[in-house]
Amino acid sequence: MQRINKSDIKAQYCGMSNYKNRIDQPLLKWYAEQYQGTFDLRNVDEILEVGCGDGSLWKYIVNGTTFTPHVVITDFTELMLAACKENLSALHLNADYQTADIDTLPFSPETFNAVLAHKVIYHAENPTESIAGIQRILKKNGFFGLSVLNFKKGAPLKRMEDCISTSAVLSKIYSEEFNLSILSEEINLSILLLLLIIISL
Ligand SMILES: C[S@@+](CC[C@H](N)C(=O)[O-])C[C@H]1O[C@@H](n2cnc3c(N)ncnc32)[C@H](O)[C@@H]1O
Image (cartoon, rainbow, N blue to C red; front, side):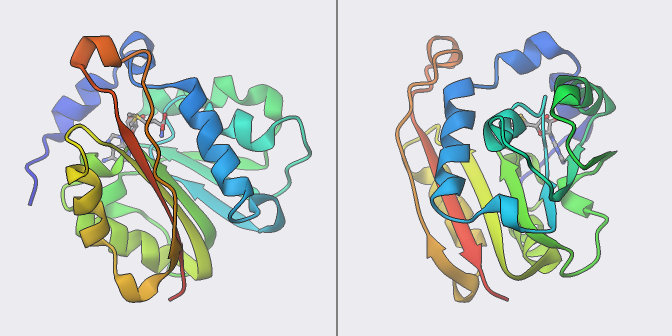
């Protein structure tokens, strides 16, 4: 099991300048494009996002259209959540914003049609349990969008795949290489792989 220090993580996300070093807009746009070809988020009732950051992903999902599903947008820190709410105010989403820890998501089984968790699973104390927890709160034939940064080619993605119950996976799709413009020079990160999964319980 990974040793996670929650106070350290909160400190990492204690300011927007720090956060802006960790997001990449073309990547968020790409997630939204992959959803479009996979699972129509517009036609469902309930969507959860875990670890929303400043919520920019929703701008690409909504993309100027009418978007009516109820969305529950969550993050570990109050600061990120407040920034997200402000960032998304013009979208007029049917949204609830609440703090939630990926390790202890406070939702009933089979609540959501889709759960989105991008670049957050490696903050979980036990990714296997967190992923199983997300699978539990998904409705039957729910959609699970999960992505990880791939610091060492293939290794983190492989770990995530190992956490997912393969019997639950209907299809698992996309991986792609990205040059992350913001981070690449600073920490020499150049590759990102994305995993999207549709599960049936
Ligand atoms: C790297 S950012 C990713 C933000 C956004 N999902 C994206 O793809 O741009 C990670 C986010 O997860 C949040 N986070 C960190 N630990 C978490 C946890 N245990 N549970 C939920 N969210 C967490 C952070 O506050 C931060 O907003």
